[in-house]
Structure formats: structure tokens, C-alpha cells
Image 1 (cartoon, rainbow, N blue to C red):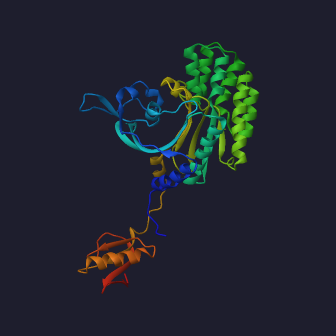
Image 2: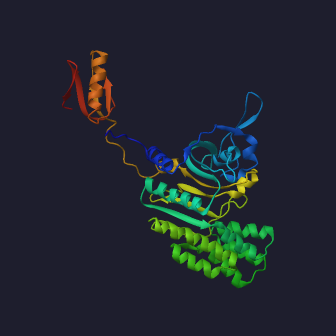
Length: 370
């Protein structure tokens, strides 16, 4: 079989399409443009607060989409009793923090919308783990039930401002910020101590579950942990536990997300390559009576690691000179049938790296020494 010199993101895209379709997910294609108001009114759903916009010929203000999931929610027909299972490969346009300009981001994702059951959630988590494994077997999937931390703070009966301040500091693992906010709220020392331990509720699932149960303030928080434990047990039964870790301090935007959330990492790649979770709240904000869970893979991140450059641009070149075009085409096919990638040129090309050189003589490709 012929080998192609594909980038890591290109290889991942091809392999993941097969994985998702095997589970019954269908490719979803959306427009590059969406109503500007959709994103302006929901800035918190995606990273950054600037949207690339333009005025259409009919006078409407449109945006180059900074997020795919919002557009899918806006257009889905999923409801209770009618589910949609889709995946997408799209580009989004977001502000670059490095140079204060817009950048195009290549993204692949998967969404399960409609009747979201425990199995549905498990299936998406399995596909998140399998996606990472397909990219590189040396991966890590971090899982959280964000309801645990939210219910912890609700049990303290805090003001809205203190609640949000503590939540933000827990999310950032800012112990100093947690202590200062707790002191400002007049919380007892033992409560402050427990809040400062929340960011460290991560690691091996069994150990993290045990510590989380010890810190639970009520039965609601215990149920949050037990739900997470149930999914971890199922993942272990499917042989996916070795690369799973819990992090109960992980909390997404509370206006849109709920329940199970997760992030994925690949060794030697600098950033998060996969992120997802439940977003039933976002569905409700759009008037959709349905649950939803999904994830996105940031394909551009896959190109940031160490990559082995191909030694050759092509396996072989075929020099055809003044030969007949039909003979040239047949000779090219004959070489390709041997599993070679071949470049046909009238004369020897400059700046092209190749392993083998063939010259077309009397309708036959003759190999020459390089």
C-alpha cells in the first residue's frame, strides 16, 4: 500500500472519521457564517470575546464562526425522543492572544444531542478516550463532575459575588485567592481549609473518589461523586482506566455547562488537545428541550509537537522527455501499482527529494542509478 506523508492532524482526521461513523455518528456540515448576534449574546461559551464580523449584501451583520457547538445548538432539531449523533470538521475564527489578530483554528468535534442517558454520556467519554488513543497511546483524559464543586459552594449559602469569586479561584487552583475570598465572607477556618483542598482533588480515580467522599457536605455531593465513580468503573471495564484521571476542581462556565466534563492531553504536546462535557444548560438557553454532550479536538495542537520530517518528497520520479502522453500515463500507473508515489516530469526536477529515478524508454520505465 502506498504511504502518504500526512501531517498529524490530517492522519487523525482520517482515522477519527472511521471511529465515529462506526458508532453511528454522521458528518455535519454548517455554513462558515452565522448571525453576529448569536455569538455576541453568548460570548462566555467560547474562548475570547471578539468576533470577526462583516455586513452581508442584504444588510445583515454576519460573523465568521468562533465556535461550532453554538451554531449546531441553534440549528439542531434534536429533542426528547429524537436524538442527533453528529461529528464535524470545521475551521473557527478566534482572537489570537499572542499577536492580537484573528487566527483560523482547525477543529474536529462530536455531539450527542437529544435523549442523553447514562449510556450516552459513557459512549461520548469512551469516544473521547479512544480519540486520544488513536492520536497517541500516551494520553491522559481528565474527568470531573462540576456539580460537586458547585454544590459544595451552594451548601455554604454564600452571596452571589463570593460564590463566583471562590468558583473562579478554585478553577484556577489559586489557593491565596480562595483564602482571601473565604476570609472576606467570614467563613470558619475548617471550611476555608476544605475549600483550599478542593483544587487538589485530582489524581487516581479510586483515591480521588475516596477523598471527595470524605469532604462531601451532604448527600447531594455524595451522589455527585458516586455518579463519577460509576463512569470510572465502566471505563475500567472497557480497559480505558490506565489513562484516566479525576480533577474535581475542573469547572466550565456554569451558565452553559453541567455535570460531567473532561479534557484530554497528549504527552509532549504543550496544550489541551480535547475538551468537552455536558451542556444541557446551553440547550435550555436556546429553548431546546433536550440534553447534550460532546467534545472538540483542537487539530492545530497536534502539529506543535516534535515531528519526524519525511526523508523524501516522493518515492520516485519518472522522466518522460518527449514520450507519448498515453505511454507516460501507463508507465506512471505501472510504478504506482508497486506501491510507489511517483512524480512524472519532462526533465529531471530541481529541489525534489526522491529515492528512485526512472526514465521512460520505448514505453517502459527504466530504473537508473541516482
